[in-house]
Image 1 (cartoon, rainbow, N blue to C red):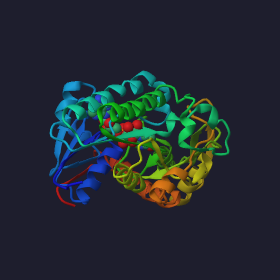
Image 2 (image 1 turned 120 degrees about the horizontal axis):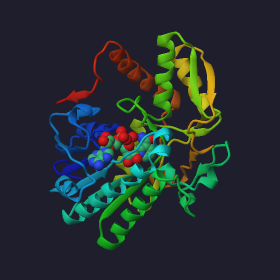
Image 3 (image 1 turned 90 degrees about the vertical axis):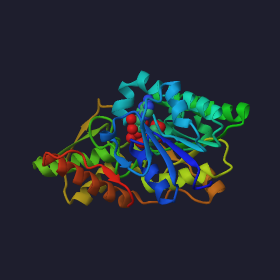
Image 4 (image 1 turned 135 degrees about the vertical axis):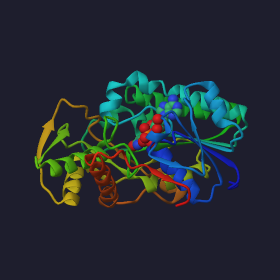
Length: 339
Ligand code: NAD
């Protein structure tokens, strides 16, 4: 890929999209177009040497504007959040189908060379995730389809859309199924945050208020794996440049229970908290882990940052954000020209 070619990142005001823009800049890409629905002052990361556009990609016209002259498009724009958000906003999550559909059409129209789509582990069949023993999900476990209601069905449909645009229109598409991504510069408050960020924030809050208690959604025995953002970015790059035509897992295979995740956060904070389990809160499937046989086979690599290491970096970043808010300051956004 020529570093002079125009690269478009959709969803660049969000967690992974913003980090992808930072990474592409770091790799020496000179022409980057960052697009998001949110007003600029709400983007986690924004760079003044990048073309920043505020567009609603639900509309076909906006997608055409975003795709104009592009060589590569990375679609990381979606309405999403943790379990609390996706269980209560199924229609909104499904409407993200408009973004991917219109972006694919615009990509064909603009003769875009390559298209990346961010899918999710939520496409997997719920019946295969009933036990707490962290069943490792292989790519074929998405079928017969019984995806996470709302959000997961949209992802599964959009994956297939990418496949058929490749088969019917010759568009180069690559699809990765992300498993729980976490790290700095992401959502940590407000209802859309995912478990690692939510737990870090709750631990910081408990420490700050002196009320040494924490609410945990579900029994805490649910198993998950969590991928650090640096691994996610490396995986996106490897998959975009690979010959992997079918959707592939991009996730850590280090399974932990939510209780173990809390253990790590407590250890980082140097505190022990009384745990209150809220069994009626949204908790998702009982067990889920990424089977990395296929990514190992094709790329001889898999996400490998230990959770304890990535969580410490995330905790420190959320701590700084939290303290800034306590001081009455706005969110600390990364806004740089050349760092
Ligand atoms: P995020 O919410 O931080 O970022 C998504 C961005 O898309 C937001 O900034 C949002 O404003 C933008 N967006 C939403 N609707 C838009 C529209 N109509 N037009 C333009 N922009 C719009 O989420 P994220 O964690 O960065 O996730 C990025 C992608 O990865 C999403 O597709 C998500 O479904 C997928 N994914 C993420 C995870 C994870 O753990 N974070 C796991 C699986 C899949």
